[in-house]
Length: 195
Image (cartoon, helix red, strand yellow):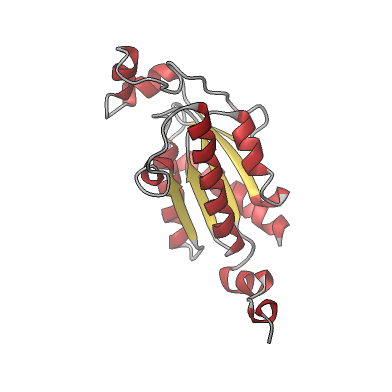
């Protein structure tokens, strides 16, 4: 038996997981609510029997992406690595929710190119910067404005909002429940067309 014959086919995995995996890439400024929304969506999906997992950009920077800084090149590599892991999760048939600032349109477009069109959902978590600063529990914006943090997205480094995201979430105006409901509805529609 060859190694190819021993491998489990994607369709066999998807029969167990209930369908193809979907990558839901939440992008937005620090403090916009990406992680909060991603973890809430994950919990709701798990409660309904759907395999889901959050790849939190902050958590990944302490392990997989430890050692990467905030230069444009390091940010690009950070996003690329997250995209590679997300692709593996979707191939396994999971719904993977990625919470990552990922400030560059070009970097997000590169990650998108790694997925089948129906298995990648870009979600722009739109929140005004003044609200992000108000929410900031770590005081990062204050430190960035004082010049203590270099290359801080939205202050001393650019953020390029998506031009055509599949979904736009207004986290400063919508309840967490509504944000989750919008994303889950989109996931369900995308997953039904991806079968």
